[in-house]
Image (cartoon, rainbow, N blue to C red):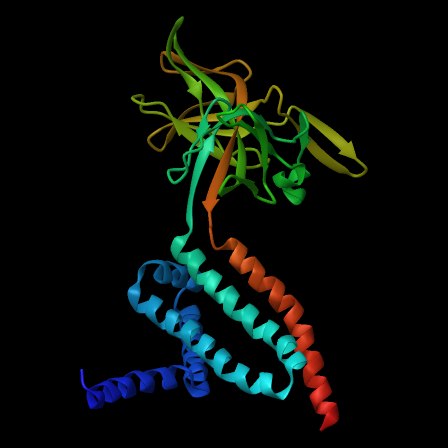
Length: 339
């Protein structure tokens, strides 16, 4: 390549770089992103979720975001030269905020595109083994943190006010506890409990013969809620809710008490849309030539596992922004007073 051709190629490269590093380009791309999100929030119910999904998988959304990051870095480099010449100490104080913003959005992009996560309902004896990890954890205990007797007050306080806990063993028999919040980091993955419930023991009998037996995962812990299960190949749907076994008086108010150690259930049996049997679980539910019995329940937990290598990057950005905002405001006030 001769000298004129090299200079022409250099000019072709310098042009886009100058545009990318200009204040106008950065301003327009920020306005474009704000406009895009504002319009999306009007026409879509889950605008942020849709944006995250597109940013994770759509190249036509990823490229503008990368251009925004590149423009921010180029503008920071361009502005740094002027700021550093004016005052070295003031430059380093000023640098914290824009650097924190760039680091945060870079971590945000990496988190969206590289993050792996999954959810699983587990009980005692089950295994937690995310597909991206070589580690496996055996669930040895689920502590719901709930009292043996529960009142209807849980509807206002919420189940997670009682701090459920999951105890797991790794391959070296080392115990770890997983709660609802904050997430517990084990190796390179974060774990936390998303939901907790009760799984009644169910036995379907025909005479003395056991036709089906097992635990049914139900979402019925909140008093007043109901859930259902089916037992293939039988054509029934069993609707179940917790039944109070006592009424407590608190001043002028009545509170129903639910026994979680030996729960009582209200059961309705459907064939199609028709109710063919109804009653409590105390003496079993008879339907046709079958009888449904309940035995001691177990607890289940919905556990979420997340591997996010960019989380420390985002945290670093948040820390810099936290310190950078007051420093930037102080510098702005000083400059205003001097003027």
